[in-house]
Image (tube, one colour):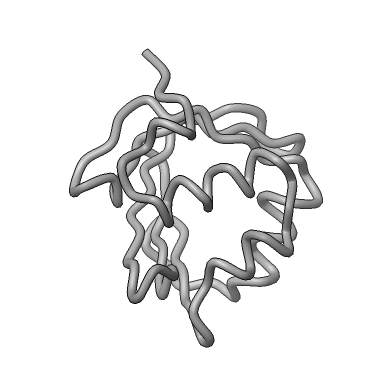
Length: 107
């Protein structure tokens, strides 16, 4: 079963998924706190380099399968033109309506 982005519980996470699926880098970046951080499979990465490579230049798209932790933890089928489709887990730390950190990796 897929959860439509508009049905996600957390409004900030809902906006992040919507920006990813729309390919809207500016909207995505506007949802981050200054100095936001991220990790991929447990290793911290340069956030802007990572999102450009893994999401925006490769047309990343999320199909959310489940959510937990008030909508701040997702399991999604994520696909892009580089890697194809994979089952991924995403955890978002939200402060004041913006994401200060997200962690992703294979689920």
